[in-house]
Amino acid sequence: MTLNPQKTSGPQRASGRPVIVAGAGPVGMTAAARLAAHGVPVVLVEAEPVPRTDWRASTFHAATMELLEGIGVTERMHAEGLVVPLYQFRDRRDGLIAQFDFGLLAAETRYPYRLQLNQQHLVRMVHERLREDDRVELLFGSRVTGVANTEDGVSVTVETPGGTRTLDGTHMIGADGPRSTVRRSLGIDFAGYTYPERFLIVSTTVELQDLIPGLAHVNYIADPEQWLFVLRTPESWRVVLPVSPDEPIEEATAPGRLQETLQGMVAYPDGYPIVDYQAYNVHQRVAERFRRGNVLLAGDAAHINSPIGGVGLNSGIHDVMDAAERIARIRAGDGDPEAELAAYDAVRRHVAVEYVQADTQRNTERLRETEDAQRRATHDEMRAIAADPERARAYMRRVSLLESVRRFGIGRPPEQSVEEARA
Ligand SMILES: Cc1cc2nc3c(=O)[nH]c(=O)nc-3n(C[C@H](O)[C@H](O)[C@H](O)COP(=O)(O)OP(=O)(O)OC[C@H]3O[C@@H](n4cnc5c(N)ncnc54)[C@H](O)[C@@H]3O)c2cc1C
Image 1 (cartoon, rainbow, N blue to C red):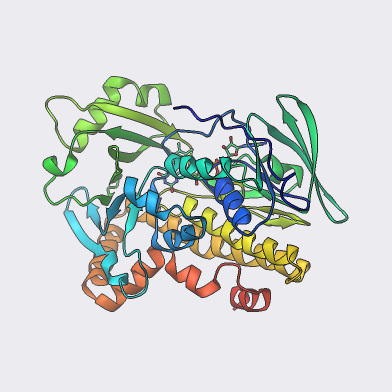
Image 2 (image 1 turned 45 degrees about the vertical axis):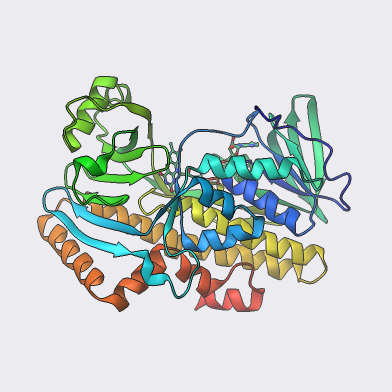
């Protein structure tokens, strides 16, 4: 059954001016659901006519699963997702270097594992809920084209299939992805850099554990020439690898070349069935600020990073969970508006720089390191961490994003969270 994504009978029935959310990707959908759970009316504006279904991020970490309980989707996610308690750091030439067990976190989280589930499934699950929610107006096929702060809220221009509309809201969350119109409308810089190589994702249904003995369901495999990130999702195995800047993308993604690439990883004489592939530019960028007036940036609109570690989408979900608590408090008259929104900016930007950017850069450099001495040093370090339960536990707390969430909280009162970000 195809669901009609449009539903326009929403917040008129809920009281008060809405919060406008731009973008119905996983981050915007989560924002709308969490605000609605607080009783806040929402208008969710999405440029595409239906929710996107392409395969992109596929990892949900412990801290994110805990937060997603707040929108009631974790049971369904488990029903469709794959629980992955172990991951490996390997070297393409030297084999297994170290194995890490999320089970070390069992005493402090209900989710001592990664849940592998392609992001479009979270989007679908949340969409199905929002369609039934009277507090939410869904505007698909509608594009935000302009944003302005007003004296007591925001004014947002939207091109809808029926013509131009001007929406009046108390706040706005810009979750409209890396090319964010909201960010650009507010003149916020998005500084950083782009990796010279493109990242190629190739998915196959061949059971790679039968071909590579001892392979885990998530594997980071270092190599000075062609590193690999190999992971299992419920639908398939995904292989992520770099494409040289010198190789045109049409050549790198030609059927024969994709086959050659997978055969180079491990031979499969029958020929790999390839069920999906994508090549894309990977960036490390953070918006210079996450807030202007009553508008907050979240998810890829605020920060983008290498997929190595699977934390970009997760931290985007944390952004909007934080934003929703603050906006709900402000609207209920329980929070100082200026202090709450300033805390969002300070804390979420701090986490994006000090955790998300720092960790994904380090993870990526570990894989692509070309200096032999440095490669060996990394091997020694990973082995030492894995061999020491206390170090391994601390490492896994950071990898699973529990550390940043426990340290800064989500929607924690401004005086506590800003103090921590300054510390
Ligand atoms: C090819 C590819 C592969 C990826 N693989 C991985 C991976 O393996 N691991 C990982 O961690 N991350 C990966 N990522 C990144 C991950 O997909 C993002 O971090 C995640 O999608 C961010 O969610 P978001 O909701 O912030 O933004 P998006 O998913 O980009 O959603 C933004 C939404 O806003 C809509 N929109 C844009 N402009 C407007 C407008 N003006 N008005 C209204 N709507 C608008 C868009 O149509 C879109 O639906 C990948 C990204 C790509 C492109």
